[in-house]
Length: 163
Image 1 (cartoon, helix red, strand yellow):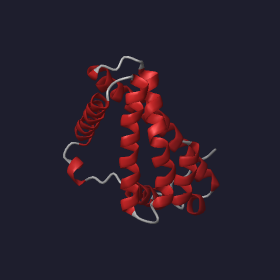
Image 2 (cartoon, rainbow, N blue to C red):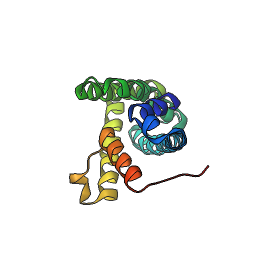
Image 3 (tube, rainbow, N blue to C red):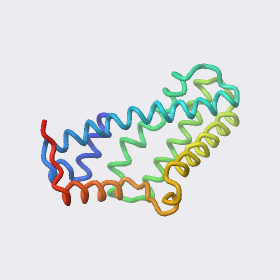
Image 4 (cartoon, one colour):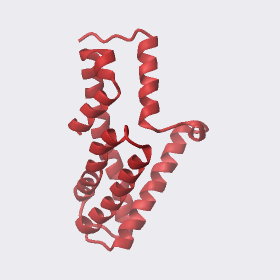
């Protein structure tokens, strides 16, 4: 996650346009949100795994989630500049790795792991819609859009951080 956060800050041109202090702040903020999100997503995933019969604990679920998404997190920042389609391929590969990892670590069948991951995606989508309401249809979740919005907010409001 540290490598992902560093690549994300560098690829967003935050390091060069915001300065060192702001870049470090963004780096720490990104790390904190990613670590928290792993445990939240892992808990939601474990609920669906438990429903389909996985009983090896939430630590195994979190381990499968982290191992599965490591290649996608690392390479999506690099591949983003080449093609957006390759980013989708990376995330689909991460889902395949997640299904295989859950199968191995939770000792369930591939079909049960697939059902658990599909249920997890549905649960996350429902939670996303509940949080965003009507804006769900209009919102974009691409990293590039988020970077542009963050850049606009920080540069237009003279946002400063005193450390």
